[in-house]
Image (cartoon, rainbow, N blue to C red):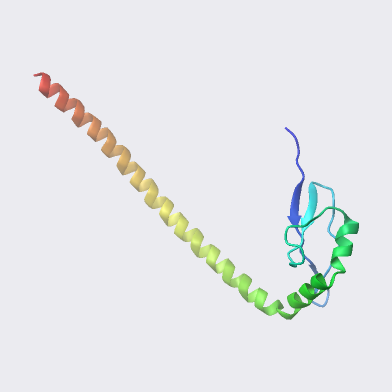
Amino acid sequence: MELTLESDIYAPSIGDTGKYTDCMPRFGEGISGYYCPCGSRKDKLYTTSSIMSSHMKTKTHQKWIELLNLNRINYLVENAKLKETVLSQQKIIAKQAIVITSKDSTIDYLTKRLKTLEATVVTNLFD
């Protein structure tokens, strides 16, 4: 079995003041590179620290960091809402799993019952 390198999504760190700041991600260690969600080059994979460093200096990336800092509270609220949504969806999935299990049991029972009745009907026809 071979190990494969995977790409990851770049995320800035949060500094001591609570603001987003750029930090150089680690290359190697199972990571083939990083995609940056800043929007300057959507599908560009940054594969080395020097390429990533030059990308971090672009105006688009810097504006993205500024925008993140301006919307910090909104991201916290959005994160809380998303957690709530995930929790409710997990509950819905659990309930549906119970319903599916019950219906599977009913289908298995009815299938066995049908086979028994078919065997009975065939036997009665021979009589």
